[in-house]
Image (tube, rainbow, N blue to C red; front, side, top):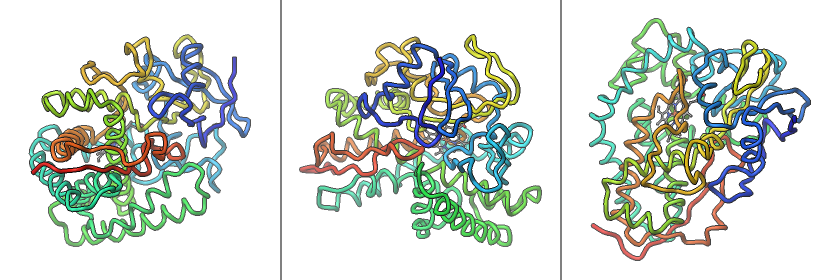
Length: 408
Ligand code: HEM
């Protein structure tokens, strides 16, 4: 069985089984053949990996190169100057999400100290303050309002800007451009223009930091002579993009999911001790980073199949996280479930560097929102909520909400 899937610019991402379940075509393939050959629309052959065990094994195996994967950035293969799809992508300086060891190891190591559990714990109170201030602003507005614009996007943007030392006032540049970047079918020249605008801005910023370093992560990196300006720019780009788009979509889509499960929402509001577990379950259930790409650097056995060297491998994190062989009733949201072990932050050497930060932001974000807005509800019918099926990160474009009163 070889499937032809409409890839790579849209793995039949239409949510035909509802806004939170994997597309039925992928769920069907996961049951029939969790490691399955497929053909891309341009005729080149690849593989789709959708079963939990196979995905976990793949992510832990660095013979599956990340040089196929420009991650959320996803520069398409038909970019002028890119090699044929059977060769690894050229590396872009600093973008270590798309590098293999030892290049990946060298750059990631420069950042691990800034993102340790301990460092994140120290930041927790400050993150809670940022969330509360944003909720104050929200409470001043007259509903209905778009929760994405007024809360889900500003919170992670404010946090990552402050940590990196990027002026929040310049957010137009990176929020607008990164959104353009993430649209799958955006014209290539527009994608490149957006990438150019962001990197030009960031190159100037890191150059200034090299001359006059301050108290922030990019300044710390700029003090390191081992890193060139191009590399610094690439790292800044990766952190800025990964640091706000993902969490923003979790906050937006997660609120939508909770509003669609009112009994669980009431439980969470009554017992905030349930929040850490609920955040893990929302991560599993929603899998906002649903598709990753890898490239087989040699012939590799996986799940009883042989993936030949040179294959493009499409990894469905959403399908893996909804695999009934791993999670009972996987398509149901259950905040009491032990969801740890989900793959939503990835697995292996590229496992999300910002995961502790993201957890703190989500716990504080959901907890504050439920506490301060006890009557929060959707301002439009659920089936009219615009889902981001056209983007590399799943979520909602807008979430119109309303409320009748706020708590102090
Ligand atoms: C890597 C998801 C938040 C920074 C990853 C990967 C996933 C992921 C799936 C692995 C990609 C791969 O293997 O190719 C998420 C989700 C988030 C989130 C769902 C929010 C809920 C953040 C935040 C930061 C961040 C807040 C802040 C800096 C990174 C970086 C990498 C990464 C730098 C690359 C790590 C490497 O290649 O070694 N993330 N992430 N992420 N994430 Fe996150």
